[in-house]
Amino acid sequence: MEKITVTRTIPFPKKEVWAVLDDFDNIHLWNPGLKDSHSTTKDKKTGLGAQRHCDLAPFGSFEERITEYVPNKKMVIDIYDGAKLPPIKNMGGVIELTEVNNKTNVSFTFQYKTKGLMGKIMNPIMIKPKMTEGTESFLKGLDHYLKTGRKITKQELKKVS
Image (cartoon, rainbow, N blue to C red; front, side):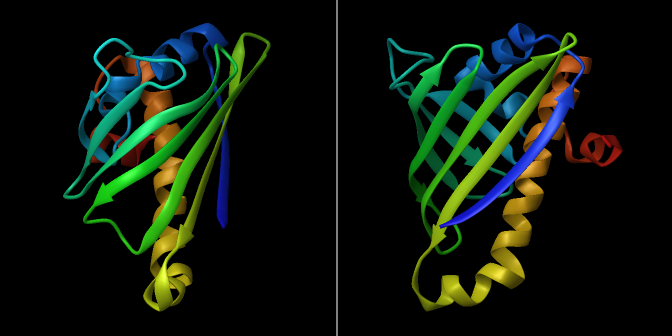
């Protein structure tokens, strides 16, 4: 199992950062790797068991569900189905928040396992670098959205340090 962990300090209190993360079906507003997202559980928009569908940019999609949920502190997400994805199986992420001096340290750990010989060959040269970039962009997009309230674009992402 591959693990990529990225941490970013976001200049907002933990409750404000959590409010964006907890708007589970609208991740496409701040994740630059997504075109769209929506809830797939009618009566549960967030919290343990909530599910969403995500459309990747430029193509592909996946289904996610929250498997662990500690409000204002931790969310564990399982990616359990996908279409037009690289040779990967068993993907997921852990988001953890800690507040320090009215700022929030956000840690995002993305985990995945490649499948087959092709996945093993492609991982070091293509998959892991792309997944690392996506993990970093995830937190940059979150930071940008909190600061501006605007949907992140690939052009704006280039300006976020």
